[in-house]
Length: 490
Image 1 (tube, rainbow, N blue to C red):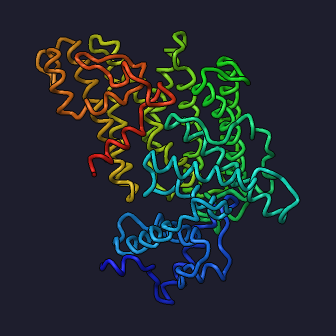
Image 2: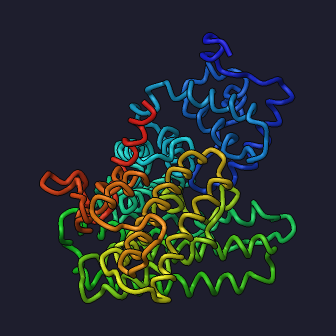
Image 3: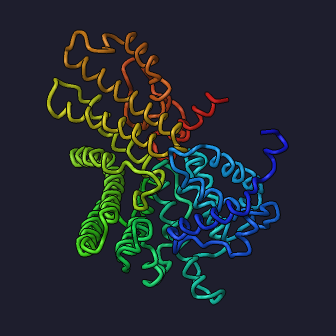
């Protein structure tokens, strides 16, 4: 590809272009009621005259929607031209600077499903830009402007951003963009609009069992309520307190939310099982597991620092990692959460178990072996995700390496404390420890651990004696980790 051709949008043949349009509408329907599609006039221009499209976000949305759907095993030629069109369209700064509904939609889409943009720093900035534009547009305000359908769509998109904002905050340890205290009274979309969200029936054989499923609508209601609680927790982790609930009250609210949500969604699954295909049932079960995984993640963060709850926190972390094998999936699934649920949430539980092993060393027991196996399950999980998500292969490899490094460190500590004379990579003394950590690339990671995890033998965590680099010191420093790999590439 020449430099000149690389700067020009790829325009398909007429036959190919119309096939792309047909495929786009099939996929885009899954985003209803959050995302809207371009008009017929605009979509023809997006495909055949992309250079003339005024709102370049439509070019990004169309091409990335198709890019994300390219099968893992398919030739990369089609993916390359789609990606090139996305990159060229994103060069238009108006997408990031001008508050427009389509810009909000596209930025949210890339932050949520954009495998090319899944790194912590990138996804965080995309989401932040989307939230700021949504506020500037007043998307949460139920005013007289526009049609009723348009207002409902805007409410859906606002609440999607609200949910993404809170989950992203608790994944990466940064304050939320959309203050919960300011927006928790914003009305939910009406029931008829929420019922439009049933992507599992559209993706998995709706023509076989035409019906209205209530599962997606209920999942949205439950997810929005959870996001409000997550927002309060984010405030607690940021400032140390909440003006709404105490930690005990928040824990009670969280447990009540999970009890109700799990029961309600399970009941709907059982009611709809007979009229659903096996794929649809499997998808709904994945949604219930995903919700449980998010609940455990929030609970573990909430219990941090409560000595009386250390046993519950540890058991919750074990339960969360035991769910990983059921969550291996790709974007052919619709209820597997968003990208940081799949990639970064597992490490919150991982490091709770890791910390317990290295700070409470003792003889070999079935419990310790079980915990080491759970850490190993996390390594395997990322290896499986690497094969599932083609565009995320490099990122999954890096996350797998992080998990594998700390698994080996935990094994080393356990072997040394057990008195094993010749274990692999045994830590015989502090000097040997430093050598082994360097060989494992562990020294690069140890300084990114939560600040309150404590010192290692022969190693002084980077966070000691200097200002904390993170807002939430109880979390792994994903942003520095991201920059570490960026420096390696540079």
